[in-house]
Image (cartoon, rainbow, N blue to C red; front, side, top):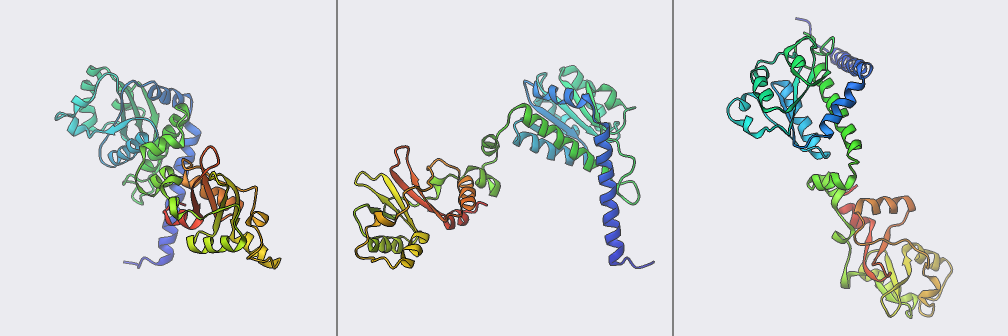
Length: 326
């Protein structure tokens, strides 16, 4: 048997990509007004979107169900065999059933079609064969047919499963637009992991508070700002009046410029060298958004103020990056 070489692997990889991309491009050409009607049915659903599939189609169905649920369309997966043994009880007439079947004649699905019809729920499908029972029994069916699988034997579901996944994602994205689904909505559905942290973490969760805030009264001198900056180690000092209202900001950059001017650290009032117009943030701001603002404006630290410009905290880029957001 000839040895399978490195170039053979690379060539096969490129061929696989070509075949799967070709399948997706074919899908793009076949999409029509049925796609909108399909999505509209789900949008108007008063119950849940319940997705069924077997084998590889079942795995894709599970992924699509997770995608729909996290993007504002409540959904769950039921295996057709389990439906035959009690899980049918989770389905009611207000639900929409989405059947995923490349062949259009999956026996486990065909078995339960009469029961689904009896319940009276809307039946949609992603089907690879228009002349099939599942296609005919569906209220609307979208075509996932592909001429050739990426599998060298043209047997294992490869291009067809990719196509189904892409079409499912298309439907999810359209529904997001229909529902005006926003980042805050996604955040409430996805509280965990790095993505959840990026979407949910607020400045109040990471900012320095109380005695850890680098703060200085406006009557103090340059040297006092240096001491406070060194002590609190945030690379900044917030200058306040006697009512704790922020009136200025002193940073590492201000320090360098002051040293270049040979200013007397003992006699120079901090109000002479502080920045009077400065960026700041609120404690309810999202940490990711503030990090992006800091990067865009090339600043390393910010005061955290309330609605009356009173000081309630401080944050710097090091704190934000260490929190795990990006």
